[in-house]
Length: 71
Image 1 (tube, rainbow, N blue to C red):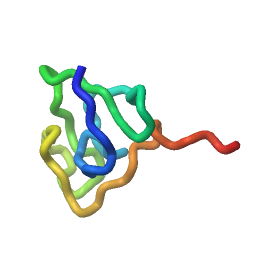
Image 2 (image 1 turned 90 degrees about the vertical axis):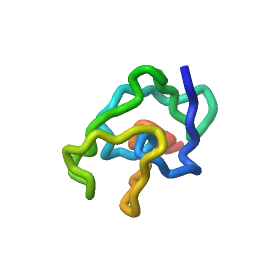
Image 3 (image 1 turned 180 degrees about the horizontal axis):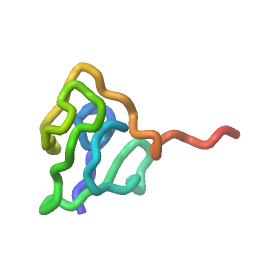
C-alpha cells in the first residue's frame, strides 16, 4: 500500500474523489493501492473525469473520513 498526506492536497485525499482508499495509520494520511490509484471526480471541477495520485485542483475538500471525531 502507498501512503499520501493531505498536505499535498491531491485528488486522492479530496472528499470528491471516488476511488478506493482507506484512512492511513498516521493522522491526515490515506492508504491506497498503487495498482488501483485512479477514481472519478464527483461533483468537483473535474466531474466525471478519472483522477490519480498526482492530480489536484483549486477546489480540494478534505476527505470526510479523515475528520477527527469531536471530543
